[in-house]
Length: 361
Image 1 (cartoon, helix red, strand yellow):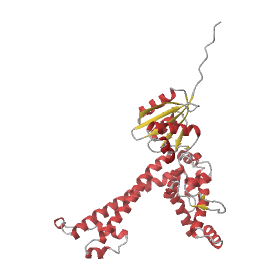
Image 2: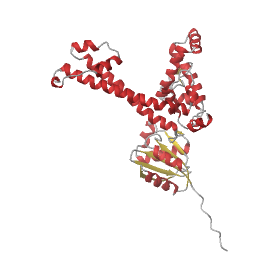
Image 3: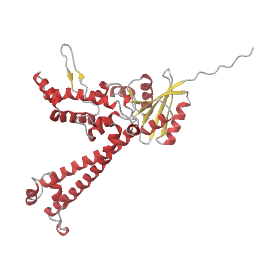
Image 4: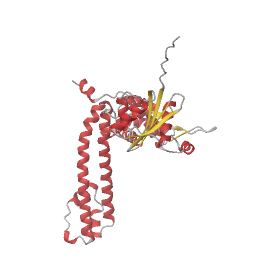
């Protein structure tokens, strides 16, 4: 009597990837947690294809955990998502775990696969293909220009402090705009650059012209950023105390796929605004959260400060809580929590620029 051949069951695979600039190391485990293999691939489009082919050679690929989906793993994440593969972001393991297990690329890749399978230290990665990613790229350039302008002005003032007395006396009380205008107009004699006063004037002129160039660069970037932010979420700009700079930071923090943030409490934690419990025994208190996205925290802080100055409702709230015995710092922390709730509601309704244009036609 002949027997009917049995079809072998399809094995469900979970992958993990430890990402670096030039190479990615992948590991595969099955549903029982057995390590099936680990292999290194180049961080190129061809390498991404080979990595995916290698993972699927073990069975049905259910999930891939990737470290650094927004940095070294961004290209791989985009490739896997384009192939309809579910990707989760893996946080790096704590130091205690690394002391127990040691560290190498295969070990980290295996740890990423196990974390993805268990749902431990995982999160939904940001989408890197939409308008918010374009906004992030422009903001990187603007933030760099602003920092360089601040550093250049600081260097000018440091030079003035140690400059010869006649030059120092004429510039030390100047405001930043006047200082840049005055120094940019200097005409030092090239033949007298051996003299400290002449050399200082030449240096101040070069720095002042650099500040002017950076001002032009920042203005050009602001011109590009304003309509882009408005097209992504115009309701966010309509909030009291929210301008292009603040709205841009909050949009980048939330990402294109805002549905990855479960609720307003998770958004507050993401921004480092949700207070952390620090109770023990009969002591019941909360402490300041120093984690989260500090740039988003600073943006919400600016909203709170602006509303305290100009918004009647916020000023009335501050007077009420002051009478209850709260300090100004505690009141601002409470305000930031309420502002985060309001912002999350608006961010949850984020639409694409195309949808906004269609709704206005």
